[in-house]
Image (cartoon, rainbow, N blue to C red; front, top):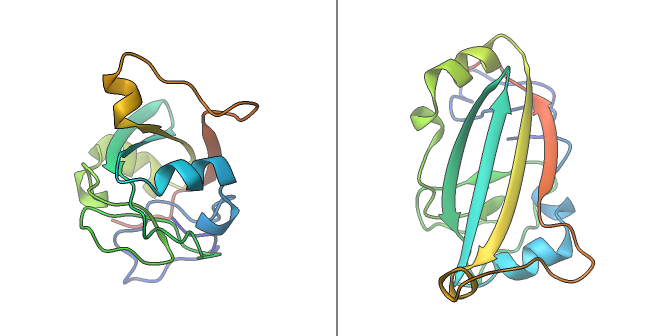
Length: 145
């Protein structure tokens, strides 16, 4: 996803433009939890009544320094734009009906949260005190794919 309002022909892995959230703007509670090797990050993408999910991991090297691009990676590469690694899906793996809705320029809603594996396996987890447990963001489908 990108906060840019345009897409070039090379942008075949971008699922949303005009994002209201960037890695730099993510809440501190999210960044802190995601910088653990023990973290599990869950992303839900919805548009036009169609939703898909991806699950990945955090990493101590996540800097969340990019003010423009947000990348959910299948690989273990970490850069300023990286929000999670080891993603269960790449853009090409998303539901085709979701991609088609986005191609027509529909609004994309994204929800994202992070939990620690040890808390989930230990029988429960809870968000940090006085912090939301889900980040919501929006953008428009780019018309790519």
